[in-house]
Image (cartoon, rainbow, N blue to C red; front, side, top):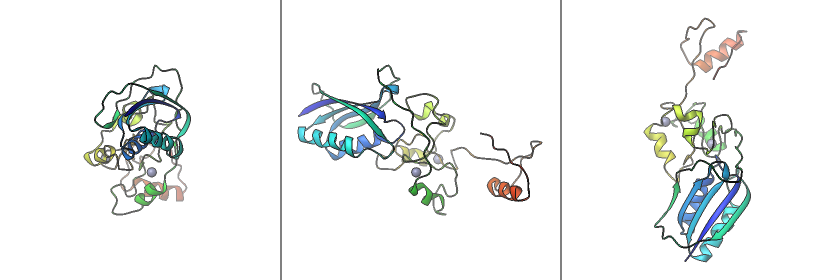
Length: 220
Ligand SMILES: [Zn+2]
Ligand SMILES: [Zn+2]
């Protein structure tokens, strides 16, 4: 049995990095935790067999999610604390020396695109569909660490369905901070220039009005 403290810097917030660490820690039968350190990167503590930890470190470098950019990994051996599982710990608010970079917004991924046009999907034609691999980051982050409470999505309480996805480590939306659906997320409405709300599907009406030569303004 060995225990290591691992500090990762780079683009490691808002890109599915913690769920990724959670998954590979489970794959290699390790215990401990992973935690966002605000602007100072991500902290990981792992305990387990030395060869499993080595395999974990290899995966950490080589299998990071597509949007992550690992710039620096510091590893040091520490005394064993006897964790009984691996978990994602609540973020702390900065104070470290390094810098984590706020990730950019990412256009919709193939999986979300498929769901968007699937009439059986809960987010069918819902324009704010997102997952860990896509969606807004930069435009919604008010401050680091990148957690929902620090984004403009804090005004929208997750419904039970979204929350179950958010909390399921094997789900594509595990810890996807902006996760939402038509029930719990932002909506959109169409108004005339004197403030009267127009009925019908706002997107379809907008398209029709543009075809007729109207000018449309969009406000967030
Ligand atoms: Zn997606
Ligand atoms: Zn929802």
